[in-house]
Image (tube, rainbow, N blue to C red; front, side, top):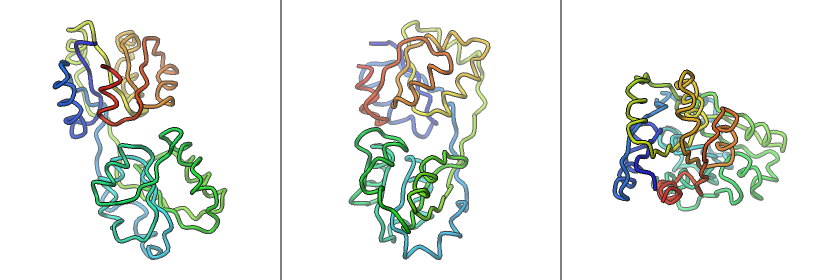
Length: 243
């Protein structure tokens, strides 16, 4: 087992994972590569509001989409099907009181959602996609080709926090046996940019990711070390992957 684990999640989302890792005997260092900020009011909400009674499905793309979009959408009042891109997002919806959530069974991403039987025959159905700003369009574009009427609700955006690279490097290299957890492509991109002058530091560190897409993206960015694929982005699965 590694002696130190570096978490790259936003501070507010790292606490539970950090506590779980510490209770498992790891030294934990938080290096938030993203900040999540709400969009108020959510973009696209006013356009969708007249169609609320006719919304057939609501697709949540991340736990952040649930945190920042559920209340503003008043999703609990919709007579709609709820879809989540992955287990963490589904858990966030259950916390909001949603009783039934449809989750991919093959892989936890847009492709996994698109493979669901429930999303094959959607001609004329109104579907709301709750996401962050500048999100990927694969999901919406594919559903539109299948005949669905798509409304995007963008309720948060990601920013890159200012980090002291020397402080991060010092902590990173203070314990040779270090593992890095990253569950976001945007975070990986920031990591590569942050360490552009010290690329070997992160490219050779053992990396834990939550999807094949992240693993492939890390390789494309130059990572040449060990990559461990966790079952999902749930805290328990991330810790289990390391232990």
